[in-house]
Length: 390
Image (tube, rainbow, N blue to C red; front, top):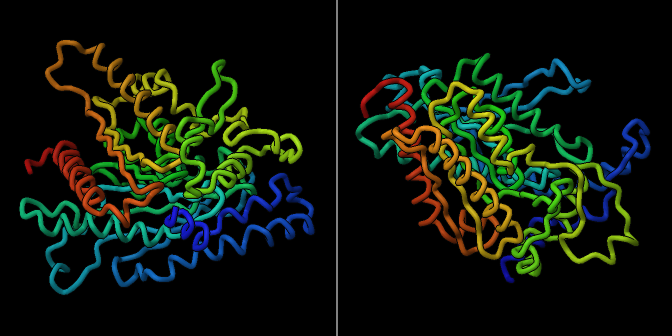
């Protein structure tokens, strides 16, 4: 409860529930009034990144990707991080980004805010670099590229805007910049983890090696499969935790799917019962879609899934639901090659105890152990794709 209290004070996303969702963005006055409600909260959250100087830790490159379709003239903003060159390693680095691992990172924030993405990237990518420095067998991480996507936010931009931006970013990195020959890995946290699921599903033809899904926001389908809601045992069980606030989780779901707010009707509903007719996972909680995407690609094996859920997290059951979906996908793929001696990559599932994203602070041994296994997976992918024995 104390952690949840601090979360509400330091990261006041709950204040956004007072803000409008359906806005006429062509009406300047109405748009400005809406943004004056969103922007103060977004500004507070983005201040978290001011405490981390990425330029002091990494070599940083900022790129903007122009959109060719969609009617939006704003570019997709992306930040690329690499190991910082210094006098000790400047002459020994390969300086061949194309042969190094590519890691595409999608931040969290309920699709409505961003903040702390730099701090989290510094922790994760920094630790992977440490593992590379202690790995005497190979320095394949020396030129690894960590790419952070500033995808468009709701309510200004509804589903599938964020997905489109992430897919555009990945396509640009792989096909235009020729990155990822040493392995392609997808990482997402919270709402970003939901994006990681869909981006991986829809990029199977790029031969994705792994995707790291950390506490995703997964609305579950109704019995007839026509609507999706956050209602689950974990949401009902942990709604008191305020980490993240359940009313904000529902507000952000409405914001991302363009739902009108009906205060009179919604006041009669228990938490989690607001349903949308938009599947914000883009079909990634349907095993048939994964099987079809795999069959239509030239991939020889499924991407390995690293999945994290947390006790105390209202979103936990959505992550567990996806685990069962991907287990079914693995089962179906293996059933078609019964005589193969090589099994499909198995799921690495981690259950933490410190609430939503709490393990980055309160359960560092779990974070480090999982990173070590993900690093080992990257190393295997690098060796396999470049035919290098490591």
